[in-house]
Image (cartoon, rainbow, N blue to C red; front, side):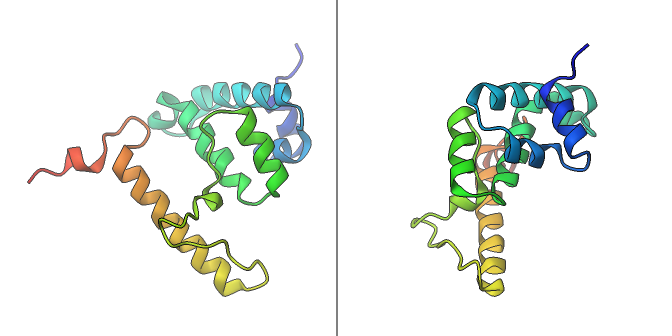
Length: 141
């Protein structure tokens, strides 16, 4: 039996199959194959019940996170191939007052990472995460 796309990437880079996929896969059909096989892997081998219950969300979050370490062409290719993947580093929006960092300035990068993490946390709390309700529905007046 031929290994699925996730297994093929895990052979290339056992510690980080997502990175292997981002670097090596350029065709939309292959990207979708990787995503589907990664979702199946999360569903079967996820380390928590939440991961196994909602593997698509986990796959989108993990791939989106890893896109933050790639170039704009890779990000565009992956976000154009799989709906719902968000590169957290692209969340820097004028509404939040967060600008893209100067990559040569470690302080800028650290501040950007912190602010982006806070923005993602706010979005998760506002919209809910992995089947959990939004924070507003949890907190009662």
